[in-house]
Amino acid sequence: MSACPNNLIIAISGPTCSGKTALAVRAAKVLNGEVVNFDSVQIYSGIEIATAKPTAEEMAGVPHHLIGYVDPNVNYTAADWARDAAEKIREIEARGKSVVLVGGTGFYLRTLRRPLFESPKTDELLRERLKKIAARRGNSHLYRMLQGVDPAAAAEFEANDLVRVMRALEHFFQTGRRISEVWHERAEPPEFASRIRLFVLDPDRQTLYEKINQRTEAHFRNGLVEEVKHLLDEGVNQYGNALGAHAYRRVCEYLRGERTLESAIEKSKQDVRNYAKRQWTWFRKEADANWINGFGNEESVLKELLTSIVNWS
Image: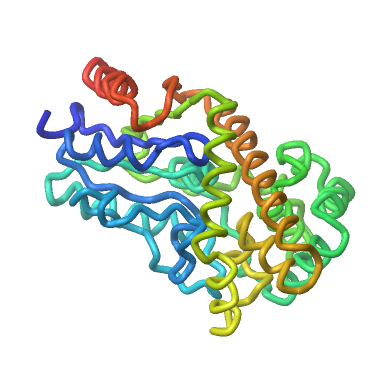
């Protein structure tokens, strides 16, 4: 198969640790494609060990885009990613190549396919205050705040979806308008949006959780604490988005003396397992998602993906 039939753009997602990258690379090789990342942690430079960024060996010669290109102190949004991704997609297709999107941040992909409304520039001081409240009183406190000012938005979010809850609160405090009132004010989707086909991996849950636990332990063995120390020494904001990812957040807590190293490891495992659950929940709400049972490195999964693409009408 030299190119993707019907000029389809393939998007591969699923819970963390399910083998998305392995499937994307193998699919790209068959489809003469290039890979575009939509993982909100892999975009940052210098944030390496616990991000599952693909190694050169894992990329297997397939060009990858939008990985490790954002300074970790930059407040990079889903809208920023959608803009950059649209540009990359057009560049790749102009070269006559197929596009394979891969990642676990469903909100990024949704923003590309259904653009967001115009929103005010982030107030960094307000965001810092909200993050400190969450760190001190828990994510649930911010969620209750949102329920008080915008119950319609709160009903659409998970209580632990800190990024979206904070953004809704920021919008309210910066504009005086509920974010749920402006959701309909969306820009037109890009011209290629209708050609995106979403495939979601659905591996055995218990096996996935075991993989998550093993990978988290490996991150700590491979120097995660030292990496975070270096990032903090380099001036990376410990309350920013880059170090707000699961294991990074817990290491910061450990370094502040708020938990033991053992607690940081175990809490990181729990965080990532819970994140996998939220990813499953998110993609269950995507009406056009095509679910494939198994992990991305299984031959049967690749075969099912390619068969679905060929048979698409």
